[in-house]
Length: 515
View 1: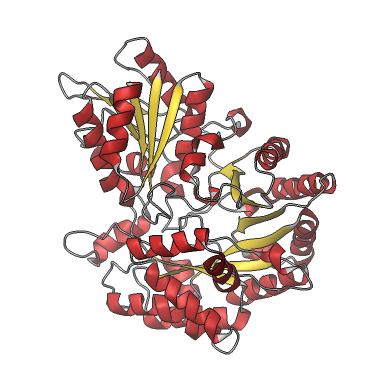
View 2: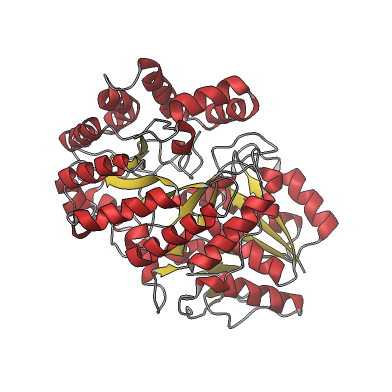
């Protein structure tokens, strides 16, 4: 059976190649497309952006291939674009079955199922559900009794709400992502790619959807793949793309199970020793006091990072205000001093730190934000991944934003949502948040970075607000040596740490599609 899959992005690189690098490949729809292909279905994947000639593409595909099923995915901010795609599919062929997955359908199912051009939605994981769905459609049946799917009856409009299956606790059963499906849409397929390490997070941060996703099904939510399975995929990936030297190890935090994380690092070190050229890695780490107060423990962790060529950690500061972290964001407990000491120690081992910073959260004041700047100025991390808070449906902070009445009348903007201020906070107004999103770089790095590097960071922050301007910049970075050099020199967080070569400390852009 022929199946189409659609993924939507906003910050595109060009009309024909909207994705800049493999780092932008999402795992959700990738795994859906891969399991369908493994099940011997004919799968085509489409990446759409605001400038994609979608009608022309879909008209040609539907006329020539005659697919029976389309799989769509969306977070809340992507939902309007995916709704339009679903409407176009049904306009071109009303008999095509359309299923929607992703965080929006899982966390706001009653809203998602109201979309008149969607026949079913997936609540929780869809790896098995979509294979059952395709199988029933292939057999000429109207799908029914498929766990994790809500299915609309085409005659009565009634919704069959099936129960959710337990989480898949053996992630090694999931096939490796078929990246050939994405090649037509990526400008630089040999750049840094990401490998899935695990699913789930043990923490209950209010701005994140993990706690809500955990409640959807029974079974163990925080899961790891085996080190052997991950290295097998890395080996295949680097043989497929021999110029690839950097791998992003995708997990909410490697500290979710530090024992398994250390085992992975030991196996990566062994793997690198067998290669002619070393790979370098980066990974996310959420700190907590139980870890960072044990110097022997975290030095062993950093020593293994060094051996495994894990040259960069994405460390979640989020806010330099300990009040905001504890009372509003509900972050794991750690003090600013503990975070700074850990990151400085990491530098001794040649491990760079890229701080994750979130601004404009409900209840935050301007003084709270200045506490964040103070921490960044004192630490001087190799880079910062700065985002403006966006109230995603299904998160606790979305409910707080509604209760506080800070969401504008008419709702929040969905374009470039992490780079545009949308909430009117009484003690940190919208205009000020937007201004500080630019001025942050000068406040934080004045006297430490060169003025030209600060200037280019400010320019990037400005461009990220505008889809078409961002696209022009991304296109120039990909297609011209001069702008590629500017990007790597001033925007990519490249810096020498404890004698480690600069090219090994390259911090790729945040995988949500920034410049």
